Image 1 (cartoon, helix red, strand yellow):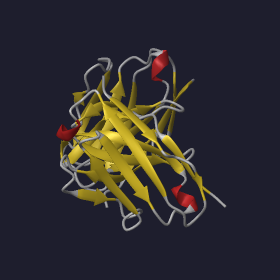
Image 2 (cartoon, each protein chain N blue to C red; image 1 turned 135 degrees about the vertical axis):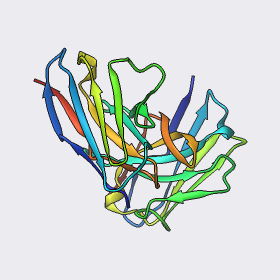
Image 3 (cartoon, rainbow over the protein chains, first blue to last red; image 1 turned 45 degrees about the horizontal axis):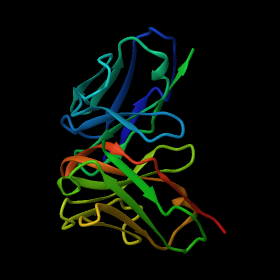
Image 4 (spheres, rainbow over the protein chains, first blue to last red; image 1 turned 180 degrees about the vertical axis):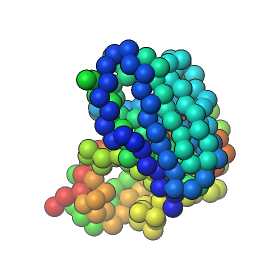
Amino acid sequence: DIQMTQSPSTLSASVGDRVTITCRASQSIDTLLAWYQQKPGKAPKVLIYKASSVESGVPSRFSGSGSGTEFTLTISSLQPDDFATYYCQQYYYYYTFGQGTKLEIK
Amino acid sequence: EVQLVESGGDLVQPGGSLRLSCAASGFTFTSYWMSWVRQAPGKGLEWLANVKRDGSSKYYADSVKGRFTISRDNGKNSLYLQMNSLRVEDSAVYYCARGVGDKSIYFDSWGQGTLVTVAS
């Protein structure tokens, strides 16, 4: 099984901050990685696929990078709507999600 | 507009069975892999099962293999999850999700979820 580890588990930040969330895979997954945003009581929403491709309709402040085993999700300037939990997901071999990163208001 | 609407969640006793349904609309159902993903209360996301566009191939997570069966009815634009031998740890919100790609897929549309509670 491929394990996905996100860091940090919790991140406190302010509106306007630039934030980065990291996701590490236990083995190489090429670029077969997606990022999701989830708000309480709601379904996840895809932000990024294939490590760096931005899903249609997602604001340009969201970006992704990485390949192999290390990946990052960056939000260039936090907006109030961005406070949520973020998950990475590998789809190289079956499907595994990271444990999540909760982005909180500082 | 893509819509996925799950139903069938309920309170069930350990060892019991339940069948979840997902009604799809707003897209060509036969063009997409479909999946089930669950989320236990306060926990992360867990992929459970995939079914190919024509229903000919199915894949399962080890945690549900042999107990859960995914299926689809392309004539009804519907996805199903038959859950048998339910355990307390199967309690979760169950989401159906549309898969983009060919077997190696990510999930671009999700339903609102249906709650399954397994308790005596």
